[in-house]
Length: 355
Image 1 (cartoon, rainbow, N blue to C red):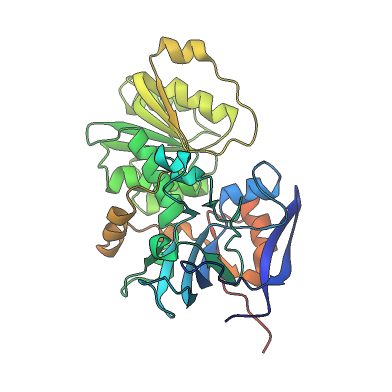
Image 2 (image 1 turned 120 degrees about the vertical axis):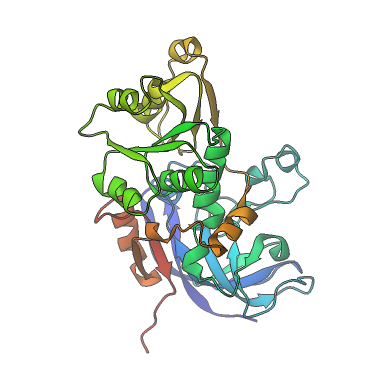
């Protein structure tokens, strides 16, 4: 049994978070497992949380929900996992029985929910307790590294959700507004898995657009800080507008832009976390017969994407632009949160203790 203290990033209230010493988790149910965190990442929603924009977050709370582990301890009823196994873990645990789970929205489970937000402690720590571990730990195939799969259950799954909601297929041209990690994931999946006719990335940051181009994830890019987006969309689509827009910016301007560039009868699929209230101009949406879809992803497509990763047909490693130990996590929140130094994704390796 693990004992003692560990390092963890703890949220204490809006704007108040720190790398603290906290007790190592203990198994409380026979279906639990404890994992040593081998790789984690900072998510945009973590930034929103520590800024105080997620009202469901309890205090104090260990932050984080994107992570890989090495299993170190299992409960008596865990049958598929053994100590030493490397796993990628779902960002949320669900019971399968509550009203939300039965309604097809397991990410909003009333009993468990997302790591590092409500009832479950998060993964930006040395160790993490994983409830119902047999169900929510995916063994990492021996030919893959943690870096190959760390983005699979959240970033790529959210991208998949946005692309599926946009009803992308080989006949359709899709725009993605805001190409942070989720937007980049949507570009990758729209092109490499759903086979979009054309994928157009739109962002203010030229380095992100260039990164997508270098990795052959898009067909066209538009720098919204220097170009007229609506005119460029007309040029690329011969005046028709895009069939669907995946909105990943999460602000008033990006949502309005999505409704303007999408053709009549098209779809706007938003996967962004909005930290401020949004004004929606229903008259314009109504007059264009637009369909608006949104929400938290449903953990779909993970098996298919894992297979594509193994086949070398889906590679998101280029998004891991920064990687440092847990010791440097406060630096990570500053660099990632402020989009400094071309940071797309900040990966966290295990805490390094002085020998």
